[in-house]
Length: 179
Figure 1 (tube, rainbow, N blue to C red):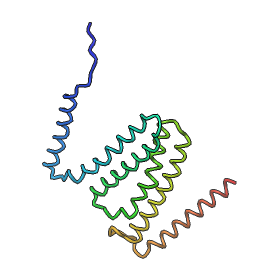
Figure 2 (cartoon, one colour):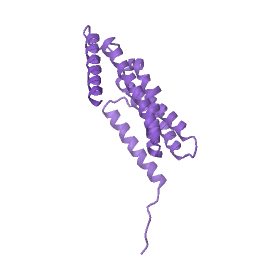
Figure 3 (cartoon, rainbow, N blue to C red):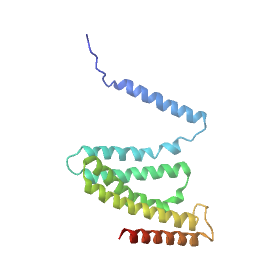
Figure 4 (cartoon, helix red, strand yellow):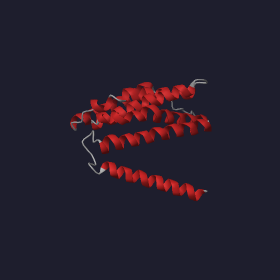
């Protein structure tokens, strides 16, 4: 009996991809979806992902390449969000997702895949710092200043102070009970 192995058929794969891309393009035309607004950030996201995959294969220098890849990918994801929602004002605080947050996420993922627990811990701390900066920026720019048109109004700052006060009290009580 002759056993056939499945082999990668390049023309078949290319043909299948052409069919999928054509179906998506046709659907967008029929549904009046502006696909160009959604597609262009992938010119940034895909190279970022490819650089990260490359970083996993090299013997030395993988961590810096993974960090660069995570920065590039995060820029693409932010641009995708902003392009789809037209919420360009979010750059006022979205940069925190690029500088500290994506670096930490890149370290965490690379460390996890390569089995470096110290890198995962370091990445978590950096990502946590960036996430806190993002949330603070979001609250300040969106809820207090209202750069996108939505604003809590005159109660925004007092509500923020009350929330932070509760957070500090709960943290203090939790720390007191742990002792």
